[in-house]
Length: 150
Ligand SMILES: [Zn+2]
Image (tube, rainbow, N blue to C red; front, side):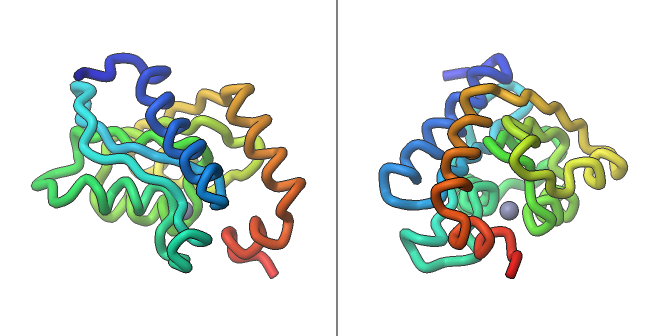
């Protein structure tokens, strides 16, 4: 299957976020595609489920995509603006494009990766914004733990 549009790609990330929420976790999902729209791997934040602070949505998708020779022609799609940690991953491996579902609830390093040549598209999907806002409001301590705020 080819995920042609950003909306189709974002739906995969959203499904991961919903899966994470259903597991009692933080509802952030991501997926890595080729520029042609082939899904390489998807994932969601696993802090609660696995007790693993290193498994953000983007790192989990990156992990599940396995080894790729090059990331230049890949697209990382994430329901929430990538944090500095995940932005570092994007820059380190030269991921060519990032699609952000929501940068209203959180703004990570998306401007920084854009300055360094990554094509960043911000969608600000109303459904995703509502979902994340509700989570943050209901789980402030868990949210602050996830973004490294004390
Ligand atoms: Zn992150």
